Length: 292
Image (cartoon, rainbow, N blue to C red; front, side, top):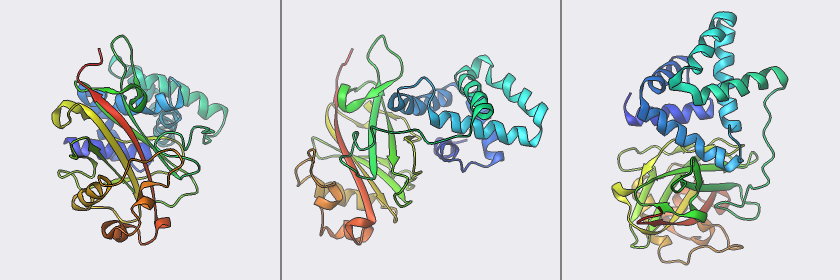
């Protein structure tokens, strides 16, 4: 399974679209590939941080769906097989989530959690899209912290999460950054992978990717932009939007969303015929040479 296929499988698994056959392949890769397992864990670290919980609701929903699918296929054998695999030394993290998911299955149906913080990170007021960037904690800590508050070490990694209000339209989420030199950082889509993210409305969702910062980032501020649109933008369109955004001030609390501040931009008009056809969010974080 290539890196591109792996991340697409993670994305489909998180959104509940992964087929049983593909799920088995993903599970096997996670069970045997230490790097893939570490990347998968970092993806969910983002949601654990946002929900301030040792196991996130997204994990519970995911493991519950996997477990229930296997139980439906073979109630006794499948459940026993899952339990033994999930509690193996190579898969102990998801074993914890599985234990919680079993309790959830028995006790009550899945529900969407209250999210009092929606609109705080990467958004404002009652906007329908929120984004967040997360980096590993400094020395001595585990998990991830919000990059906008703590910054990121250039030697570290960068992860993302997003939330789309349940009442918002379904669409593609694209994500890109512009640094202090005006260089564009592509997250989704990228020149190597033209796919955006099929956004899942509801709770906070991890973006299925982990970026190694010192590969193509430099120290300094990065403004992260997210766009939810019915039409998926191309990399060339991302470049055009980034160029237009570099000529306008960064958004402040209370300002209109960035796609509304670019009203009249010809590239944006192709993606969003009217401002109500899109949602957007932005935040700024800094990358430092050394956070240790």
